[in-house]
Amino acid sequence: MSNLICKGCGETMDTTGIPPFTTCECSDCGTELIIPFELDYLLLESFYDKESALDFYTGFDKSSNSPVNIYLLDNEEKNIKELKEIAEEEGNILSSFKHPNISPLFNYATIKGNFCATSPLIDGFTFEDYNPEEQGILDVNKLIDVFQAALLGLAVAHHKEIIHHNICLKNIHIDIQGNVRIRNFFSSRFTYNYDSLKNKETEEIHVDKSISPYFISPEKAESGLEDKRGDIFSFGVVMYFMFTGKYPFQGSNQLETVYSRVMKIKRKNDDYLKKKTIPDSIEYVPPRPLIKLRPEIPENISKLVMRMLAYLPVRRPSFSEVLSEFNLFKADKEKKASFVTAQKSMVETKTRAIPKMKPLSGKPKMQKKTKKKWSF
Figure 1 (cartoon, one colour):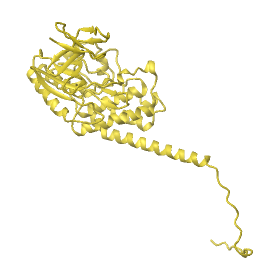
Figure 2 (cartoon, one colour):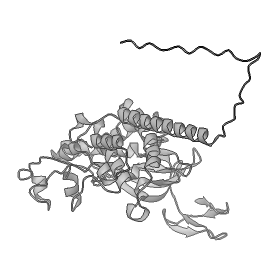
Figure 3 (cartoon, helix red, strand yellow):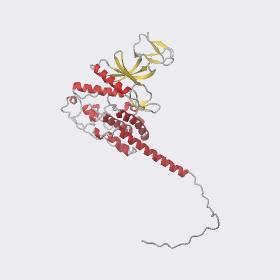
Figure 4 (cartoon, helix red, strand yellow):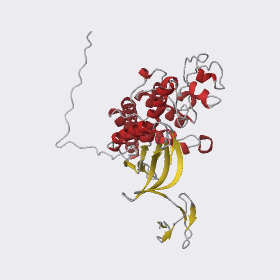
């Protein structure tokens, strides 16, 4: 016998014989419920995405009594043994990494032969929910505050040699209290390692389809490999888009978009690219500076983002450098604001009249006027 507690009224429902993920209603209060798939202490309630060999579910962790995102490794994968080793290694690295601006990995385990990991299910929204055509251009100063928080988390992650590998709009989250977090470190790092394993087997460049073509670094597009400077490029694309409402690199299809940031590709000798419907050459066009698209963007911020989008990784600043520039900009802005407030206060304050003081005794002695002698 299987039971399910209604989230609406708290009544216990008998779900015996009902297949997992079936949607039903509570007979007492009418609350819509999804029959979960039980995996020991985890209740998988709803499938919502797939990346490489990971299936994503929303669910509930009975051990911590909290709603969670659940990453479940597909046991049907050919190299399941190697993939489990990769997943366990990433789980070990990330479960001990805690930072206020990073969405944490709660737990990871192998349950009944299934590898699964969990992260918190948080309310709020991601940058992917932003539509510039509907919502217009966002306030520059508010964006700088958000980026400053995200940069702090990423700078700490890179200091610990933890690379994300898929910085994009959907992986930057803001909850209803305004807290900014970079999420999906586990799935992004696993997918990168999964692609690397595929590349070794097939001797071809393989990039998972779930990776957004707008944010991929040039070196990853060319070779499938990148270091921490790939994250810097991707975050530069995020800032470019959020500031201007436009992507720095675009094409008529996904493949053209990916290779629009690459200067030289040997297409004629590449069997993989021969199969794709793309022209023989895609001209590399550097993105326009942000300040040209939106003049109110501070010039130093515009130059900083353009440095992050440099074609060569060695020319990109580190996240610590980017964060320092943002901190200096904010400090200078606050200093100027305080000075203006002080000036305004001085102008608005009424000046007091100073009475003319009389000499304490008698008339003051007049000094004799003497002629000044000029000398050179």
